Amino acid sequence: MIFPRTPRSVRRSLCALAALGAAGAAGLAYSALVEPRMFRVRRHRLALLPPGSEPLRILHVSDLHLAQNQEFRSRFVRSLADLAPDLVINTGDNFGGDTLPLVLEAWDPLLDIPGVFVLGSNDVWGPTRKNPASYLRRRTSYGAHRAKDPTLPTAELTAAFEARGWMQLDNRTATLTVNGTTLAFAGLGDAHMDADRITDAHPSFPGTPPSDATVRIGVTHAPYSRTLEAFAVAGAQLVLAGHTHGGQIRVPFWGAPVTNCDMDRTRARGLFPYRRMRVHVSAGLGYSPYTPVRFACPPEVTLLTLVEAPH
Image (cartoon, rainbow, N blue to C red; front, side):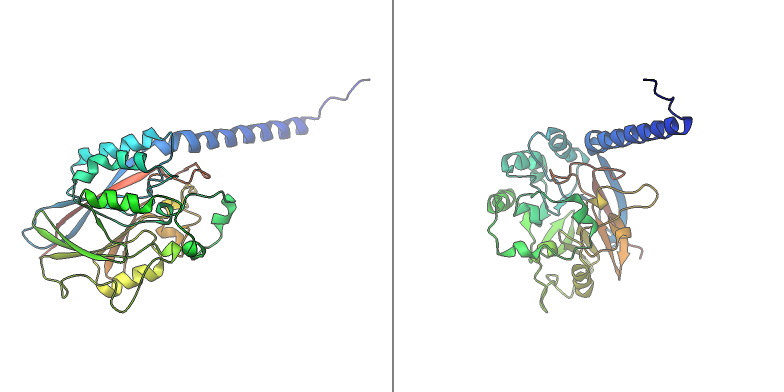
């Protein structure tokens, strides 16, 4: 039996499909194997300090999500001590599973530096398998887990950080003097799991009304609009958060399709104004083990240098 020759148009279509499949496979390999190792240190200068103050270097790290067999990420975190920050702010989601020893090993060099921290939902409950398409829906909370017992060593992580001198800020306040400047902190729990406790009395900053020698910093894990509004009302000058992963998979020249909270997608990462304060949302370092890719959104930490404000 003699088969007719394949028409040229069909051959072209088959070639196009093959090329598309190859491009998709290459993109998947890049997003899973290459970009997650392309660490960035982003840098910003903020004029917030009183006249005569020494510059203050704040290292903001978020969403480590450290799992087994991720020594490459642990090694990068340990290397951050070489940046010589004056203060470390950790905005949560340290675990990528039950990996307490690995997390503490990664953080170890930075725990000798003054620091503050809050917890994220992935510091309380381990990751669960989800349909990745579910992240395309606008989500307002993860509060259904509030009644469940923790599945991760949350208390042990907190105790280990505090034993080295770091201060927990979940629904708490604190003050810290660094390089001669007094920093007043107000923290909120993770709004993604409805752990934020916004009341008439909180958030508020210790020592109010603030003196000229105080910088007021709000710290939380997820930058929900209600938390940013609460910090703005309290008089924060700077707010730090994470959670969004910068969108994790971004569309080149367009940005993040989602933020996994109620924040506008154009604010999925970076430094931006909000009311009379500045907000920094970190794109973070990791990902859930069930969505182990990053595309057009390299893992990052940020070094914020506070300098004198204009007279």
